[in-house]
Image (cartoon, rainbow, N blue to C red):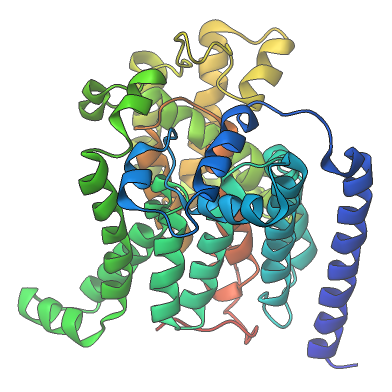
Length: 414
């Protein structure tokens, strides 16, 4: 049997496994009839609010009581309008989008990826993937469009990539990190192939790929104009994300988001792909980048330690599940910050040198943007973790590939 046929079988078996798993979860969660969970208490009324106008008016878009951009609530409004005000139907919508996302992930994987099962498992075992799939949360909608945008980029279907990333931003504003990463990667690649500013400018207009993704970033502008800010001002004030925070930056969230990437992606990737030695040899092979990374990490640990937001709206004391796990075994205070620093150093060593590729830009832009987050949370890195696991299936996109990339069914975006 030829490799492509074997891979098709893998995709079929993976799809059947996911289908059976989703059926099991459906009954495990009592057919999604359990009581409302956390954000569903205000997401359900918002979906009901949108059900009054299948095509929302400007007044509705100005007045709905959420921080997030509205596509998940528009879709939820359609479901409520057809099936009635029942959280079960909205959870089924989320569940279906989650299943569709995994099918997109599976069936757009390369023809003979050696890391297919690792990457699929890496995405599915992220704790928040399950939680965001079984409840009416907005994250899965944004992730679906992000993955669609990445797939379109790899297939060089850049109009589709623009539309998918724009739709992702219309689900969650911070999804603009992904088209920004693609645009930055493309621009830097053009710069590398240019000898001076004149050729750089000429090459920039000759290779227009970056323009599509720069345009996708601009899809945030109408929302900023509509609301006079990144979200409706009354909701920002209610959730203690006031306008003065727009000029503030939380380096502690940068530290913790790097921890999440190390725990949920870098360490599993390197352990199960047999590349863990690269971390051990990194200081000797790349002494200058290592020292630079060490200085950055030390500055964050000492000057900007990671601390969770605490206000009347949000009172959970942990930065996320990794933080909770460390504190549960007695790792607290400065020792915990040192552990965070080690994890961040692992993330930086993985993505900064020797090859800064699309995955590296996705990490850098996402981590930078999360310094502006309302609070710290593991799930804010879930779209990035999904994107990293997807790209890791493609030899041409995987910087740990030690041998020249073989034809793996991936599209070369160049």
